[in-house]
Length: 122
Image (cartoon, rainbow, N blue to C red; front, side):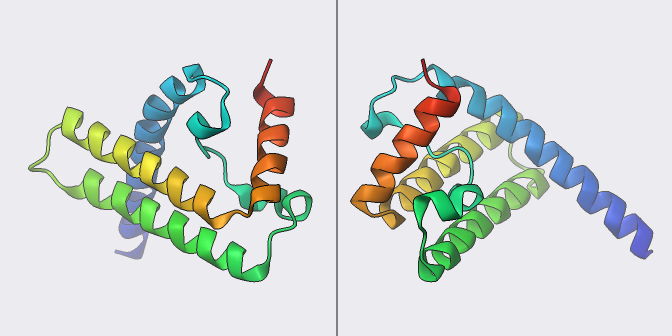
């Protein structure tokens, strides 16, 4: 039974990742202005470069956890169609992005923009 639950969770996570990827790809087409910048990747990967405090890391982890729970509950909800699920995940991504952005201080935001542009920008 435990193996079945693990497989089920793996399938749900895989499906959630598929939804996320299908929704994230349009984000890259947005303008490179900081106010339109979506925090798609987890800033915890750049904890040292951004000089994140422990409290900020905990906040970001909580925000991420809430977002992943939203994805999981959306996937499990059989009464909601695929377009609605995609919209829920997309809106959740925007909300997640804004919450993470609000967690960062001004200097960290500038550093994030530089990291993002260096990695993915023109």
